[in-house]
Length: 404
Image (cartoon, rainbow, N blue to C red; front, side, top):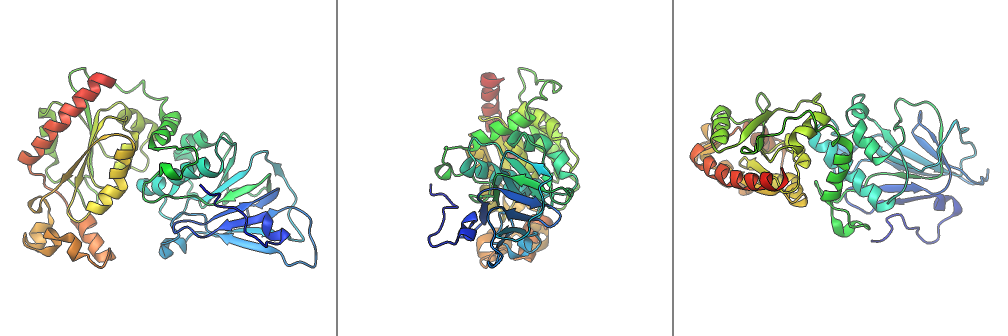
């Protein structure tokens, strides 16, 4: 793989200290090569070196969030400024021996799916692409007040150093160099062929286990005869709720599973969630951000995604890829027209229900997206669903007997 920050020919000495690659669709990536001082109050990195008062400083600006193609959200991401050749740089107050890795935790942060899709998976890719086996300091922009505490253990699985938040720090920091931006391979994607060290989702999950895998003891182990299944509940949320959830729970129990209903909330402990899911043998849930918790499943366990009408592509791109990357026993339960609550409003013969691809041929305008994602609930066909459960149970039982 080529160095994404390889220098371009005919650069001035000032330009050579700051390099940017703006060619990828999803992200920009910049580098300050050599000593640099960060002024967090202005979000500026000053490249240190000989200055010449007759030269005009060289300046680059970057929004370090990997959704460059999406103008709406990128307009809300704050610029980080990189300056070389400035006549004045602030004095250094805190010296670091490791380089800085800088990214934004703004945008869609707060949605569990986006926290990983736009944050931790690109962070994993970036570290293993441009800083493999190197020590570094995480510098984050626009992190909500809860973010650093919720993800503290995961952040420290990446870096042993305290996190520097631009919004809460007023001291200047000196680094031997800095990388700004995150590399993305696509929706929930880790492309092994683009990774210099051939890292995969299995390695990413190993990082999650390093962060959260020390809290297993307090979760009771399922009995040897009944594998544990996690049912991700969307009860009370807007759209994609299982209307007949009580019947579904009974059917899962009748199939032979020990059922735990999990409804993740913003304040739900990641340690507890990881311990519960990691000790389970199967998970079922309707397509939605909560299925990002499938990252916590052990390779070889069963993952069934219930796919509402109209979201086939997103279901595969967001969570099918995770399942394949983690070597899960992945099952798709695609609901039929009669299993969608939309049939009451639009009729069973509506193109919206029978041919969603043709219906949204011009893309995903907000109104259509809201119909499929926010207006639609599911009423599972229990006869059909029990057939899927029977197969899932056999796979989960086999996994339990092998892995415990």
